[in-house]
Image 1: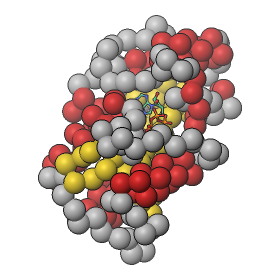
Image 2 (image 1 turned 45 degrees about the vertical axis):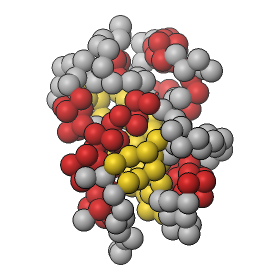
Image 3 (image 1 turned 180 degrees about the vertical axis):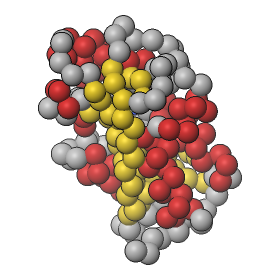
Length: 198
Ligand code: ITT
């Protein structure tokens, strides 16, 4: 399948989440690509009306590409807990409430989980859209389990309660370099790079 190449040196990142912006900027750095956050550019935060990670990533990427008149990369991601029927899933940010307090979201996951199976995975879907409407979309996942109480102050969101398979420490305790080597976002990013940045 042929993909469209991105040939610029600056990329609009269609996120209002500072934790994601830091990670995407880190992942882009080796390719000499500078990032501009949607908030920095004064772009509005579109309502996430899709019912899949893919649909939401694409709608955010299209909105930013139209608004900035430049190619834009969006990330829609979340924590999927099979024992909770896939929740919080695409609602991961919404479980933190209007104050975006992830201690509230993690406590809710822990309460609803109670004694059930603690397996979980993170999903990230990256979507790169151009102002003419073309779009390239890639998914990454990292599987693991949930711990309680949360541990570590690094990362963001649900990181302090997630331990990836083959590891003992949470993403909240992990060096960012180590998280970037295995994370859902990094897996999706590698697919994006292979398809569009080489
Ligand atoms: P934008 O839509 O502006 O990008 P958002 O935070 O609303 O920001 P999402 O709708 O994609 O983004 O929500 C994803 C949520 O899933 C995010 O707020 C985190 O809580 C969680 N999440 C995603 N990736 C994560 C990661 O690497 N570590 C921890 N939590 C993560």
